[in-house]
Amino acid sequence: MEFQAVIMAAGRGLRMGCLTSGTPKALLPLGHYPLLYYPAKLLERSGFEEAILIVPESQVALFTATVSKLGLNLKFDIAVVNEDDDLGTADALRLIAPRIKTDVLVVSCDFISDLSLQRFADKHRRHDSSATALLAPTSLAFANMDKAKVTGTNSQELIIGLDPADDLLAVFVDKVDVEGEHLSIGMNLLRQHPHIRLENTLYDGHLYFFKKWIVDYVCANTSLKSIQGDLLPLLVKKQFQKPAARTPLASSGANTPTSATSSRAEARGDVAAAARATDIHSFVPKSSWADLARALPGSMPGEEGPEGHYTCYAHVLSQGHCVRSNTLPLYSEVARTLSQMKGALGMDAVQNIHPSVVMKDKSQACSESIIAEHCNIGERCSIKKSTIGQHCKIGDKVRITNSIIMDHVTIKDNCNLHNTIVCPNAYINDQCVLTNCQVGKRFTIATATQAKNETLCGDLQGF
Image 1 (spheres, one colour):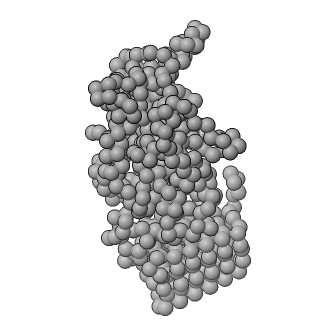
Image 2: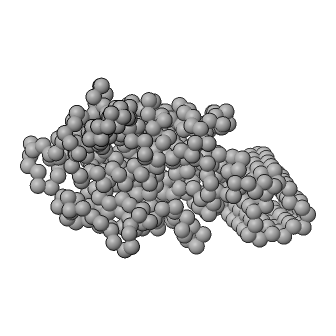
Image 3: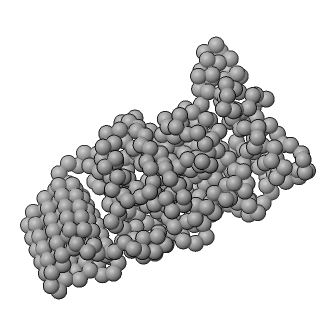
């Protein structure tokens, strides 16, 4: 097995509003499946047979039951984390490190794309890269979506520098970390790569290939919390710096530096020894840096470069779909456009309207709508660009436009919902008009309610 796959599914989804107050983000419905299905399906169609799935400790039973119903030929090795510890993605990687025996592919549970993982992996192999990140232009990431709704939904605006020759990742910083309008670039970087293309319109897909030694380094450096915010910027920066001192190279044996080694060194006041024990270059296996050094500008055939050298690369998509459904606007827009992406995602056989749906006379659902199994739709209803979950009951003369209706929702007669998300088991009485609203789980809307731009939820704690 060349790569192990890890799906990050323990996030609390705080930017999803009331949607995640009772449902983990990874299990939010999107079309006929939960969010988790889409990265898992990508792994399956790329040849993976198993994946480590990181989930919240309190939701193990729910995740276990859900993945057993996905219909995928993918074995899930479930790893749990305590969601109360406010862990980042690097923290989660550290906790499952004992299970990682090879190089690793890390993907977020909200990642949706039709990319070829084989091409992505080929680039990682070709450059013998230590870390390879998937990037996409924002214009591609938000293709077919309402730009006004998704503008500003990317949590971090990144400044990314690439070598135009091969997409070596030379700069990776959050814009908020740049002082004023000046970006500092080291001379070592410029000497090795004098031509760097700076971009501020690239989107980090949160899909990464990492060498095994990087997982070892994350275990040693406990200050790293986030892959995108901490680990990747550090890896990109340090690849152009020399090792702090000549130290034993990491291996699978006893010479691998550990956090315990570092702690003992600090305890006896040996600061220099502690620094060497956690120096990133000391984790790079000897077998990789010789070939990498030969590829450096100015290197001669057979010449070996500095001890501990490594490189980071980017794989930049030029076409297709690539988006993370990690905010409320993005989740809503992805749901609205999912039917347009079905073919590219290998889901042509999945019918938009399930055969078990009962739709009465003169009711219509446009081709871009998705209605799940065992729903009952009353007379003269209109459903446009919307997703209806399982076991929903829709009354007569109901209009639903650009909305997401989750499982077991009841909507009585003569209601009008526009750009609205309704959580599971909600009950909407007759003659309600809801525009740009969120209706919480198990919440009841009184008859003839008219609401606009509101969150309607019985328990507003946590917002």
